[in-house]
Image 1 (cartoon, rainbow, N blue to C red):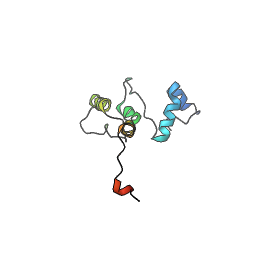
Image 2: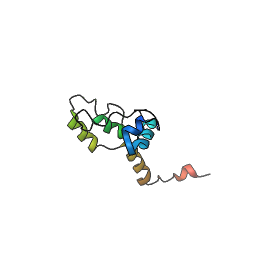
Image 3: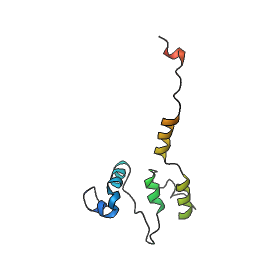
Image 4: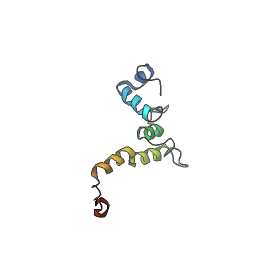
Length: 102
């Protein structure tokens, strides 16, 4: 896990109050990349990771610089949220009368 597991000091020290949430998401996905670059700016690969996207889904797009990557990620849909929304909002499909007849 990025910076060590829960309670190892690395994750807690690096992420503060968010350490347990980061550790849970790392367990489900992959180690968290650094959230900021050397200039203190948000890194697009961190946003990509937070959204549960595969590595490089946006950040490996040729010719797409950091500002455009962040714009794309900000305008994107988080797959897990979209899936849950469809589950909750889609009406159930009616059963076919011929398929349910004894």
